[in-house]
Image 1 (cartoon, rainbow, N blue to C red):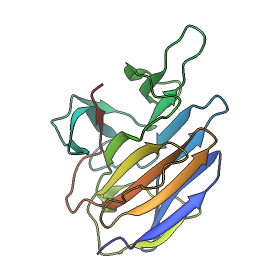
Image 2 (image 1 turned 120 degrees about the vertical axis):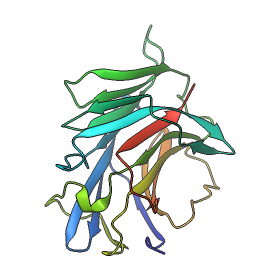
Image 3 (image 1 turned 45 degrees about the horizontal axis):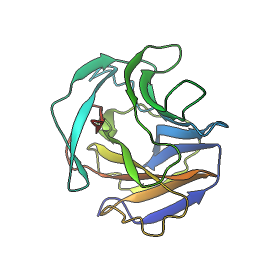
Image 4 (image 1 turned 30 degrees about the vertical axis):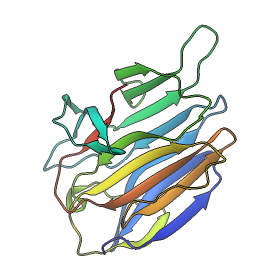
Length: 208
């Protein structure tokens, strides 16, 4: 087992995801809760000189509660990373999901769906990092320690799930480390596990 079982539960407006990997630290990203109920997940692991600052992204099919890795819809150079966000409905504006380059970058994907309030759990994204040995490193303080073997150099798989606050059963993924973020309206689980393959940076979501 490359990643040990570990559970972290933090109540925070911003929740950084900085993994300690041997003597290095990799800032995968962070989640942020906004005052209006919005959720923002930001990536931070881009910047490989070997693979280039690109990410593959697109829709996928959800079968038996798992996203199937489908051929990417797009390949995009995103030197500063990306973020994916959920926004509740406002006045005459519907509830939406955005996938975009970090501000002031472009919105690359937009989808309207009624997610707020969160009445049942759903998967927001399924993501793969680049192989750890070519990910950008950081000097930031690690928030997850001793969970990745220094000898593991392949990609990590990351899944973001959204739950109603009162959910009792969360059904963890095999060999995953869980990071939880909580706000008054819902809970967010970030599950990280070894993918045991070397992939490009990839993110996909259920077609709605």
